[in-house]
Amino acid sequence: MKLRALLAIALLLAPTFSSSADSNLVARFDLQVHRFTADPARHRIYASLMGDDSVAVIDSGTRTFTNTIPVGLAPAGMALSPDGLSLYVALSGTTRVGVVDLTTLVTLQPLTVAVRP
Image (cartoon, rainbow, N blue to C red):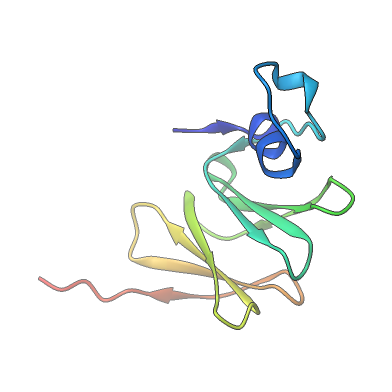
């Protein structure tokens, strides 16, 4: 299920949320987002854009959209590496996991997941 970025950003960044979405809206982005992952160390939010085969980068400090990173086919769930240096992105319908270097925001060689019979 795709989420509207404006609603999710309001939920992530607003101190309170009421029944009126615009009353606590802190940022509006016209993105069709599948999942979000927060990176508190870098003050960023990453949003998977399945239709664009990329990940959007949002600066949570300034609440601005900064750029997109192409990661591969239909990115879905995401996770930060334990050391916080990489973003791992599940690529739907494949046996690959996209990898983004969070220092440079460059896509690295994807990982191939072995599928057991």
